Image (tube, rainbow, N blue to C red):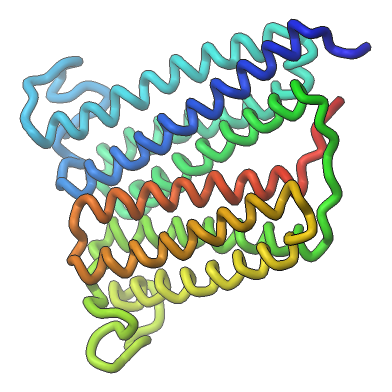
Length: 303
C-alpha cells in the first residue's frame, strides 16, 4: 500500500529535523575541540557532575567544559524524541527504525566515552575514540535524514559505476583513518612536532616514520591527508557522469583542499585556537559530505 500524504509529510519534516541536528552536532564537535584547545578537558574532575554539583561555580575553563557536557545531554533528549516520532509509525519504523537505532547506540557510546575521557584523565585513546564516535554519530544522523527524505520524495536508488563505489569506499576509509590520526596528533601534543611546511623541519619531509613518535605521527597525518585528497579527486572524476553523486563528490573535493590549506595554516600559525576550531569544523563537514556520497552510491532504501 502506498504511504499516505500525511506520513510522507511527516517523513520530510523528520528529515529536515535530522539535517538541523547535524548542524548542532558539528557545533558541539567544534566546542569539544575548543575545550581541548583551551586546556579545559579536566576543568571538571568528576562526571556526570562537576565538583559534585549540577551547576558549579563557573570560571573560564569550567564554562567551556560544562557547556560541552550540557549540549551532549540535550542531544540525548532531542534524539530520543526524534526516535519516538520514527518508531511510533509502522511504515517509518520499517524505513528508518534500524538506522535510528544505530544512531542511538552510537550516541550512548559517545556519552560513555565522554565520561571515560574524564575518568581516564584525558587518555589519548579516549580522546581519539570520543572524536571518532562523535563524527560517526553525526554521519548516522545524516544517513537517517537522507533515508527519510528519499522515502518522502519516493526517490529510487540510482546506480553508480563500480569504480565510483570503490572510490567512495576508499575515500571514506582514508577519512576515518585521518580523523583518528588527527585525534592522536591533538591528544599526544604532536601538532607542532613538524613546525614547517612542506618539509617537517629543515629540508627533511619525512624525518621519522612510525606513529609511536610525535614527529612520525604528525608525518603520518600529513601523508594520509595527501592520499585522501588524491582519492577524493579520483572519486570526483569517476563520478562525473553520475548526476546524484557528482555534485557531492565535487563538494568533497573542494572541502578537502580547503581543509589541507587550513591544516597548513594551523602549523604555520602555531595552532591558533580559531584555526584549530575551523580545522575541526571542516573535518566534520567532510565527514558529512562523504556520508552523503556514500548514500548516493550505495543506499537501497526500502519502498
